[in-house]
Image (tube, rainbow, N blue to C red; front, top):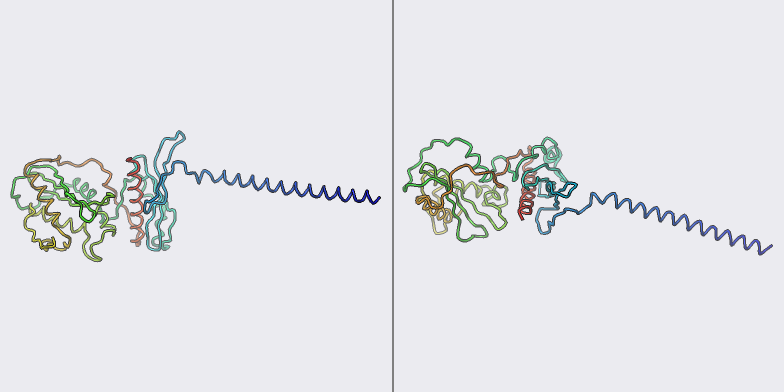
Length: 334
């Protein structure tokens, strides 16, 4: 009798242990299955397929190729950011296959002020980016290429110009400095129409292909806190040459500075040297390119509206989009 009770107790204990094991195993299996499902569900969103290496690229958080079902590249998406008023403004910019046309802009994150910078989220504001070519710029900050393109569309105005000291041959004459100064290589393009200089464009770019004209308009290349920007000073020098039809007349001190043109504080030695070289070419006609409206280029850009009352946010948007464009345009050109 005692043995039967002992056997019953042992049997009950075995059944209990087996039941507990079955329940525990079932839970563990369910957990593993759930974890497996979770990974599967999130894989499409976290997929790195088509991703582009952005290591070492300042301001670029991520980039990827967009493809269709057959694997053909249909565009690019770049996530980039820049400092706004209250913090970093991060955007995802989608480009077409030409790596220049903006297909759309989406706000990823920001901490801008409600009613001001936060208005960048408005669909009406973001819609302006659909289908426009990069780079972008705010009103009054057009890059040189964009200004010349617009000027070429307008009828030439009759202006009183002093006659050129030497007969010039029509055409476009481009020259560049022999060496870079402080990391920037200067270039100058001079245009002659009907024997007269009608346009002079002076600029300088660094090894990344960034131009002083653009960098100065977005505050990344500052001359002074409240004086004319580098681009404004370069434009003033160019206007002087167009008016005088010559590089003569500049009073230059031992530091390469001049007070001949009001508001110009930059060194003008390089500008004068390149202008004289371009005028010499124009006198002979050597190296002339046809003086006609240039074809669409990757550097012309598009003017966009600012976020009303939010200068810092607007500048951050421009910087973010242009960084994304510069990165993906260089990537696609490889």
